[in-house]
Length: 271
Ligand SMILES: [Zn+2]
Image (cartoon, rainbow, N blue to C red):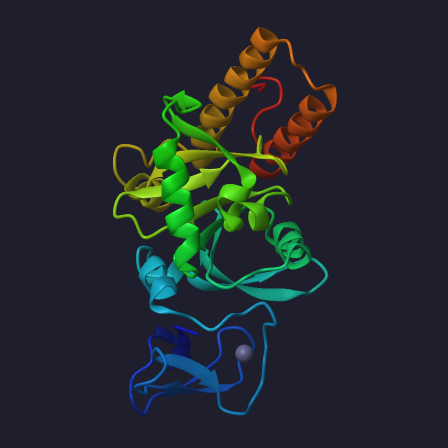
């Protein structure tokens, strides 16, 4: 972990520091070696959160974009189950930064546990994912939509899309591009991936409540995006007269799941 309590204060590891775990209160020691990133570990070998993954520089860079008091926050469900969220914002959004592979069952469990959850996935873990994705974008001469910029790609164009399509929650991919994240939209299915360009800066500003965009809540942003894309898909279907009822139903279901998770107003804003 990046943080531990030292004399009641959330501290990053420093050589020689002892603390207590944010999750379980057990004694911790600062591990400040040269092989792994500096971190806190339980003094006795103990796992207090089975969802925890070993952190990389990538995790740390993301967490550091947000205030220290939002990082590594214990979230407790009504039944007493506890987990440590990577970041929990002042609007109660849980941001999970995921580097390693996550099986769909565990992802589903975390979605259900945190409810208002947004995933950011490290797209650079396997080099071929980024290469294949950027190639697919490059070859797609006509984006599905230009405002917002959305591409409709074959789901197998990038293994990450295959892995993250499904259990309904917002997933952003970070391919290490300076300005850009890519959001996998709920219209995606096991054939097509709809991926929207999303400014990295905007993502951070929205969740930090900073900048001119900060006041516009996250759900409105993604709602607008989904609405535009869904509308365009519907128009295209009518135009091509190839309406596949089952697919329409599946997409409507996926959109509804996002609507419930992210709390879009049902009566005011339909999509
Ligand atoms: Zn612990």
